[in-house]
Image (cartoon, rainbow, N blue to C red; front, side):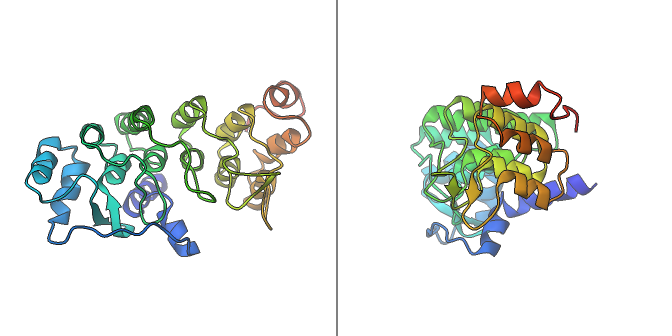
Length: 265
């Protein structure tokens, strides 16, 4: 019941938007078309109703790159971001073919790929649609990154335990340490996001991909210290071991295949 409630809350507020709003992160502005039946357009997108959305666009009711006020996005979110959030593959295909901006961000700097990588449904079919949305956006040319000092699609996938999306994004070249430099970062890395949430398998995937456990938020924590802070004792030993060896294959050899770290949570 708790997971169901959290899923509903997440779908209502949109990704990590609530966290970003509360923390005061500045977002991308944008005006939306006045006089639009917002509820109708949102329903077209959520229900993956391409004919109805196409009719609205063709009649001039709304443009491909217009924004709509939506839950968590009172300043207006791009249609393509809303489609990615909902995992509406038909609408995504239509918007991409019609020339929608693949990287159009919401007012809190969430790109369509970030939302596709974050959200999943309460069924395997719904999750598969969001995985397909990730692939569709990347193959169409969406950026794997974000503006400097912002969360990335990989960060969102790590935070919400989207392991298939995580593997895909890493395979396509997403930076596992985001824009960290000299082991310092202005915002949590994907590894930190996974540590905060207690996602052990995601932590392992990121370490195996070469994530640096010694990166520290400026004035803040490393991934291990986040795991300790949030009392994720099943993750802290992994990160402690990883801090002592080079990343990637050395991590596998020294931590995963030895008795230094238990393989079961």
